[in-house]
Image (spheres, rainbow, N blue to C red):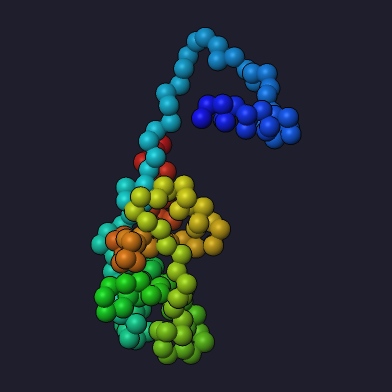
Length: 161
């Protein structure tokens, strides 16, 4: 097996796909910094429990829930608690401005999600990529177990300092 690995490595070197270089810089003597802190996962900072609603909720009731619980995200679930969409405070404002009446007309059906064991760096990148400020955290059955928002990330940064 080791001969096969060595032969493959030799081929890579000869084709220029694996480059051997001089060391970049010596480790040196003196002060060493501690290793990076452990990876922080979604489950470490997510907000729980998550307030959810069914797809038959009215826009008026959805807006009252957002105000009552002082939240900006209302995940929409089916009768089994499985995520099927999300409504934000912005969606509600837009619905009122456009005269929409049905929650199904305004909810985002293709929801960007994450799992409990995803590193927050990945979640933050998703939020930036899709220009969103909140991501529902789901289990393997698409049931909501938490939510990570930009506010959660801000609290984490404040805590780190």
